[in-house]
Image (cartoon, rainbow, N blue to C red; front, side, top):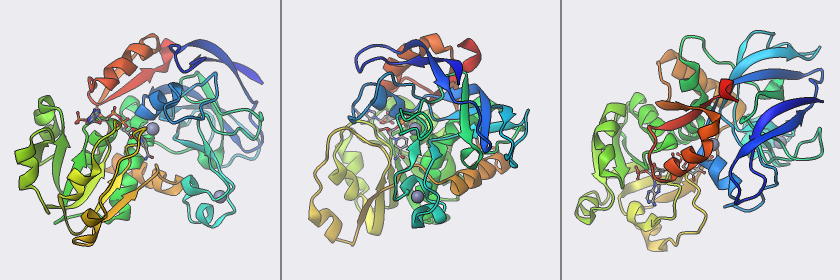
Length: 347
Ligand code: NAP
Ligand code: ZN
Ligand code: ZN
């Protein structure tokens, strides 16, 4: 084992603070990575504060990890010391079930292992994420990143990027489609960039009037203020596809009403309380309400390669790790453009 500096929450109500964790020494198939940057996802906050239940403490969040390989196990073939590498939301799965065989490790039928707060098969405890100096991961769950884009802008692709890319691809969003992206935060801003790059007509659906100019800079063609009933009414039946990235409880019926015939609304935002849906909102015009979880390893690599080829990175504000608790408060207020990324050199 080797001791690694980290930031952890000791309970649901205490702030994140320095803590030392133990990482395993690389086994024959493991890659050890020195973490350079780690993005701050709203899921980190939900987990740290136990808003979804099931958090094990101490909790070390962080699943938007980029860094450099410092050591490899004897059987590792895909990476060598000195390579840039990334780790997203998953560090393991069974690799044998039908979903794993299809590259849908996030839906592993035997339970995929999250990068943090997952069941660690090696330690018998929980996994610890990227708010730390170093991570050790099986090479099958390590990803390649380009050295042509800024690393801090790549980090958020590992969750915000793939979580929006995967449903946009699965529902075949492209030219001629009218797409609404609901919520302009970390996920939402990547949703806008990706949907626009796929050729769709993109409308930003936001409750923050101050974000209109930014939404257009990010690639949105239209901006709609969700607090303004009269603007909403005009959009009845308009969208082929709505991607819902909102973290707080909200009314799904409002947006289902804006779908066209055969339209789909896909929830990736994960509020902590349920929303009621009227069956008629789905029955009329054969609408779909669906969900989507991050993305599998092959698709995550596909997304990273796509973003590298098309110069797509996240818009970030780089922070010192000592400011992480303040950043959570700012994220809750929507005061981030559009992803905090921790410079791990500050740990
Ligand atoms: P974020 O950066 O905090 O963005 C959330 C956005 O939601 C805000 O920017 C805001 O956009 C909107 N919002 C916030 N509070 C609101 C309120 N009270 N009413 C209406 N809109 C509100 O969060 P994120 O990191 O993008 O994550 C978003 C959600 O996705 C979280 O619940 C997270 O856990 C979840 N998530 C899911 C997956 C998955 O695999 N499905 C993966 C990652 C994250 P506007 O100001 O534009 O309205
Ligand atoms: Zn995330
Ligand atoms: Zn599996």
